[in-house]
Length: 320
Length: 265
Ligand SMILES: Cc1cc2nc3c(=O)[nH]c(=O)nc-3n(C[C@H](O)[C@H](O)[C@H](O)COP(=O)(O)OP(=O)(O)OC[C@H]3O[C@@H](n4cnc5c(N)ncnc54)[C@H](O)[C@@H]3O)c2cc1C
Ligand SMILES: Nc1ncnc2c1ncn2[C@@H]1O[C@H](COP(=O)(O)O)[C@@H](O)[C@H]1O
Image (cartoon, rainbow over all chains, first blue to last red; front, side, top):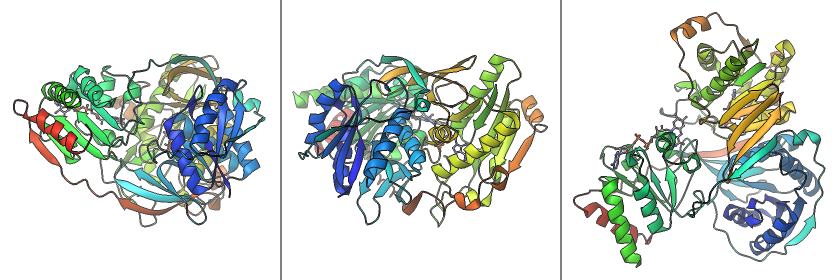
């Protein structure tokens, strides 16, 4: 069986959930091989998780020399592994960085690239991917026809399945060119953890828009009662009410949770692009004509400043 | 500094975007415009030029159907100095690998004629929204890629950006020549002024075919694409849900009952 390379996304060895989803998808297509670029310490931590989710092989690459450079070294490392293993596919988590690595890898290996897949299935010839396009109004089935299929997959596209893999580690020493070391990260300030689930991975997302009037407390309170992540519309972000990293939509994050609750958000096409594929959609908006109500499974016409605190109290009571 | 800005002509997001029978995006039969996200790229290029206040030039480059001239013209109206439109029937249906190949070839030709130091792109096109073309162009040109800048400063030969990553805010820098991409957080784009609109009429605008930039027609387009679409389907419209009007707490009650019925609580 051919190998399927999975680029591991991790923070100091803590493997992200989307990576475990990729391993599950990789097992459908061939033999999952994780590519783990990080420090020796990180490698030790990550190996366990990767094995637990089915990695047959783990290529470890020490990043001491390359970590200060942007994505280029990662693309070179993957290109060398592609040349060596002729994999059935390369899977990368969709996100700013993942897509760039994928784009460079596609050029380097003269291979087709599919980004933002929400499903990948094995088929004769090459895997078939499903994407959601035009603000979620269309789904597209596609496949790579040239070279090695390179596919970036959105978080929440598969349920990670724990299935012990062989987890054989192999240290890989790449040759990284000077050319790849030209865009340099000169400073990095970690973002304060919010203590809430990660926006793109959360099962429930509660968002606020211009209708909050700048007060996100009711939104955060309701989110916390449900154990949800908090999101925001661009109007709220542009007003400086909430950080950009929480923006949902075309130029923010795309989320596809089990439940999305939009509060004081009108439902512009660019916002929909980021949440339309959520399983269940709920909205609270004081304007019964708001376009967001066209999407919802359940809607409350009302003032979020009254509805959310009351609902928070009721949820807490029930859970109590 | 000679700056090239890559701008895309895209179907209007608020209009009816759809696919042709060969599964390519209909770019001709629908209203189109300069991708809003590329306006930010034009804006940053203009700001860099204004800041440098020297002989710097801004050339806009678009690859697309005949109507894509509109995107080039709007950029000229905003203040760019010259425009290049690569237009060839054979380009239709190209994927990101094809588009980046054509862009890189066109940038090389601009470079051969007048030199280039900086290529500025938007963060993603509003239709395809892959967000990979800037990285691909940088890879093809063999120059650094400094991408997704939310704040851009240029000092001598160094381009420095603030990049709001998922886990950290980073400062990233590189030395020209390089490819830069900018986000919609980088600064509001200007509207063309009346003066700008009049001035644009006299600005040089060239239209190039594939042979002008040394690309064979069989290297790009739908048949040469590295990927193929098997099927497209309109997402079934969401069935209308239940809407209640809040009256003295009834809304919160109904909302929580609904969430409980769906086992979210
Ligand atoms: C290129 C481009 C990219 C974009 N990308 C994004 C993106 O990624 N994400 C995004 O969100 N937007 C994006 N936008 C902006 C988008 O077009 C909308 O402007 C934005 O989503 C509006 O945010 P909003 O719904 O919070 O505000 P509004 O449209 O102003 O809606 C506010 C809503 O709150 C309701 N309201 C007011 N007070 C209350 C109250 N007390 N209780 C309950 N409801 C109340 C109002 O009835 C209204 O429906 C983009 C636009 C462009 C051009
Ligand atoms: N056909 C095109 N013509 C000119 N520039 C383009 C074209 N396609 C993409 N770009 C540039 O690449 C960026 C990202 O595009 P994409 O990868 O398609 O999301 C855009 O914001 C543009 O700056």
